[in-house]
Image (tube, rainbow, N blue to C red; front, side, top):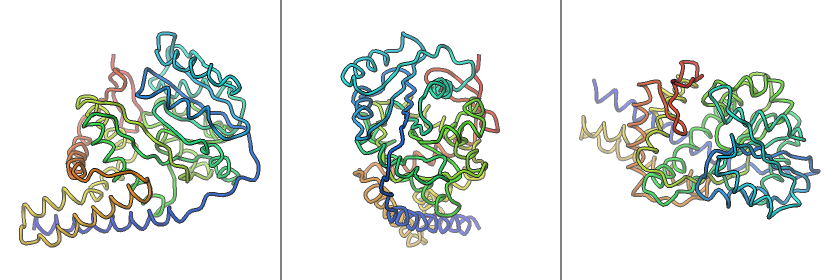
Length: 371
């Protein structure tokens, strides 16, 4: 009985992998629209500390090939070392309108949302691009986003991202998972039900849409504010899309402790944001399921081998064709098994650590500081 149950799971994982490849091909077939006229854009950059290559990352936003945009930065107070980096880059680009805000202590758990809220209050434009500090972009990012938002029905857009690893093993391992697996779930959901959520470190949205769904005040208690931003916008009837513009997400030189804390934060927040979708992630893990099948029924090795080969094909499609990223094939099975372990761990516990502060995550995705 057990071998048949595991074989059914392996079959489900194979079907998912094949669907994700189809979803990737459909995404690759999209051609971004041509920009017919520009609209002013506000870039919102919440900062906290010194991320790897922060100065280089910020510089790419000042170098946009776009006629009218401003950049707003926000830090908590003058003790944040990111402040000096921002001021240095500002001096290099005096013709680009930019402003640095000191927000003070956030009155609610999500300090990133508080910074975004403070920046949005003083932003000059309706179209805003919210981007984390570890993001690097090309000079055509704003042109691409502006072209996509020529569609008046579009309210929120998520930018897919290619992970760029730092020097540590754990950074390379996490980048491998992001580049060979993470995008698959987004593309498959997009194909099957449309984009009804937002995710990732760079999101574009209309200010009017954000205000219409309750503003950042509605997101302040959620850990996965990006997800609910897209969810609430879709529920209100606004268009939500996966942008054609690919950004770079630069992962710092993290050690095992920080890597584990980051992964636990992700899986525990995902389980509460999308409980059924989280359980269904089991079908996104062909390799661990195939190894389980081999362990209980070695004679079924052909089925397990097929699952592993299809997983490899899907990983190649996501990384090489969609994200244009290199693959360290030796790390793929290690990452797959590690991701499976953290997926199981996500079913247990309700606490996370985020930038040195401990929080408790509630069943509905909200979270609070543990005193």
